[in-house]
Figure 1 (cartoon, helix red, strand yellow):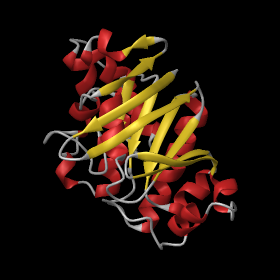
Figure 2: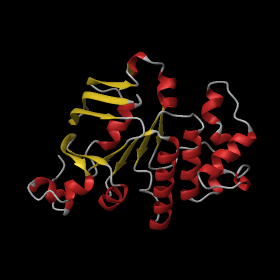
Figure 3: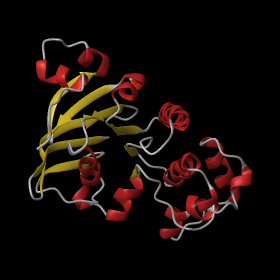
Length: 239
């Protein structure tokens, strides 16, 4: 579903360095690394919020630069660290993506989307600024799901939440992923969270892949000193 080939991005310094990987339909890939490792920049390059200096991104076999940019962002739905909502009702936010394509989402469909993210019908007319951050993040998931994406790009979606709300969103992610069979790329710096998801994982440091494999295998890989320093909070340091 998603293939990344030799992706590189430079600003004042190298942000991403020759990254390559694939994500199959129904697969979740966790991208793990410290702050400043280039994880968020990677997601932004995938759905064309940023333009890489070199490399290619393929969505179901088509290079994303050849596709309409709004179609790319519909098909690769992105949930950010802080909910990216407009100052309006929950209903308006959930229907925003289709409305940009001059399509209408019925009230019954919006209610169903809200139920899928654990919110009841009473939230339909609520203003999003009256919601907790955790509730806003659920609305952000419903907003993305309204676009029926092929790929979910999740940029540290629990980092702004308290531990209880974070676990609720983790369970929501697992439910959505298993139920909709989307290809999912989850970015996190939270090692225990990555272990809980127990997926194929890329460990990125300084914009490059330090290691890849099942997260629990990586944690137990005592032969990689640099990797173990990362897992035990001793480094490696960012430039």
